[in-house]
Length: 305
Image (tube, rainbow, N blue to C red; front, side, top):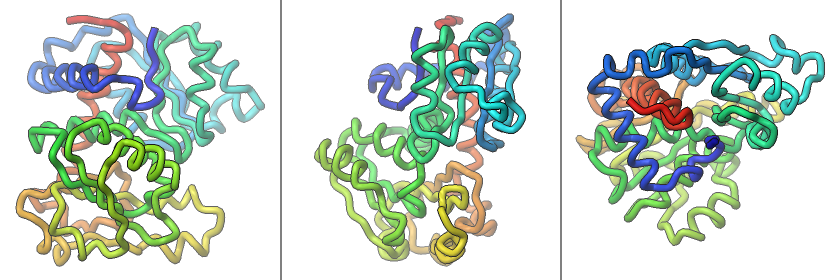
């Protein structure tokens, strides 16, 4: 039995096979419509979520399976003091596979120690978000045709942004990837990502504050929101929340084939006037998320079609 806690749980070759499967699902959805008949996915979401939770539910329903779960800690026995370990033991009696989001880093890993069903990390604190990374990789590969020889700008909250941390860990395994880290001083990449991931893998990166200075050099711009829920005080959040706003004026400085990605939800960091730009790929990214989660469910359940 396998789990997905980190994007590094799959080798590059396994990732390629997973993305190939997701691509086949995109092209032939009817072929997979009953692949998970009789299977149940449990969604254990201790934090609010729209895209990730509904994407998992949509994925399982498209495969012919069923879904149960909870959408907040308050609506689960966690509000009574039940531990993650006890919850997953109980859920293992009800479902065949589960997706867990938790505010504490490492909680899904704790669940794997006692679970008798595959556990998927759907986001743990500011740590990792591997299924968003799979979505990002599929989006890049589908729209750019490759996952190597790219210059990628990561903009916004790079300190607490688990999607950024997971994406960097996945992409350092590909050739000729340059990272441009765009953030205010207070939201720079954590030192463990810079030293243990980028530098340890010999990857070139630069840290800058102004998006305008580097946007013209990018193949991809990965925007992130400043996350209110990760701040310890409101004053710091208010000061930094609108530090970056991508608008038409900045898009004019970008290459004609640059893609704009965003894990969503957005707040103000991408103006709605950018939505109709053909380079805006963030809503297509959402659709790819369903396909890749369908492929992940099939892979972890060892279902072949």
